[in-house]
Image 1 (cartoon, rainbow, N blue to C red):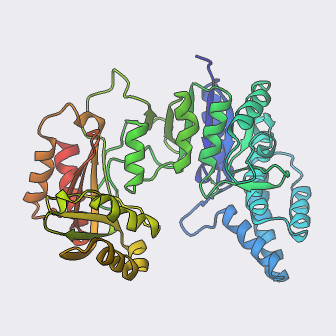
Image 2: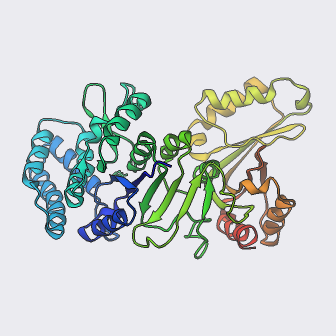
Image 3: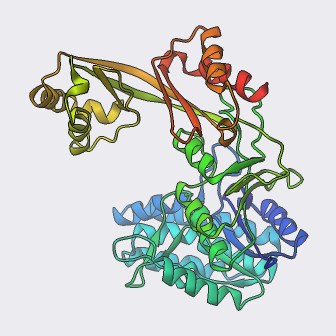
Length: 442
Ligand code: ASP
């Protein structure tokens, strides 16, 4: 144990002075919380505008010479910070920050530079409030010219710099390119910064403070008050996120996962809740649960190709999948029969290339029939505990049968981590509810 926790706070957790005070209380409650990664101020209420969005708008107005709106947006941004500074009762030279921002925007700095100032200024304010050091992410997070993270340089530099300080605030969302210019991660990227900082300082834990009490075992827009997932493995998280459940930026898992650092999703507004612990394996004392969560996505099509004696034709499947891959369409599932093979793909990608693909299948594979079905959805039941539990598939299928749902496709990954069913889009919500009731509640 190094007694080091990296705590990342998201936009809603730092959207106002009162939220920043809550974050500060959380930080002070555990002396191991030595590094804080901050997002830009997010929404305070549902139709509020995130500072990051205002900054992108401001950049665009500057670029198009829309001077009046440019000044108004800049003022809005500065006013949000002014209110925070006033309510935190700190001494902060906001005017200097705003002037630098304006000057750099007028000097044609990039949109990434503009967007990054949200976390940059917020982190400086928070550092002042906590009386901690501020470390600019541009000095410790490095991208290569091709835009990917320079991991070795980043982990080494960030580790050396931060471990020398007893406490520090680091702005999320950005780093620098080899020429020194600013580059951001994709939206929501402060999660990635938090993970990189945790890895660099060899933290015992990466806490990700947000506005929900953890990841939910099903979509709350479909299932009423779904259970919070207390423990989830990195692999299960990956499966559920891929199927549409979102709680963290996709790339946030990789830096900490490699180092075996667990992630704890916590709620800034309910710090008493334990949240979700994401780690390599379930802790030994965690209650056994076969199924961790249920998620799904709409918008699939199935292309079913039939040819008698297909199974004796070597390379038929490979040729079929190659047609999809060379047209830039990844396949999601590929169930096969003796003389049939279906390819499950995203409808929006397929629709663009439909004619070309059908022509190529006909010309190159001479099938007897091609059948296309649209408006399909996939629902996944995910849980590492399913490997050692009997009758899981039977329960999935009978729950769907009882709900009157016709299963169009079945896929069980060879690691038995998930069972995925293809259904009609119109059955999507009912399927999630039926599976939640059977597989999570029982
Ligand atoms: N502020 C950035 C965004 O709104 C990054 C983040 O908050 O993670 O996407």
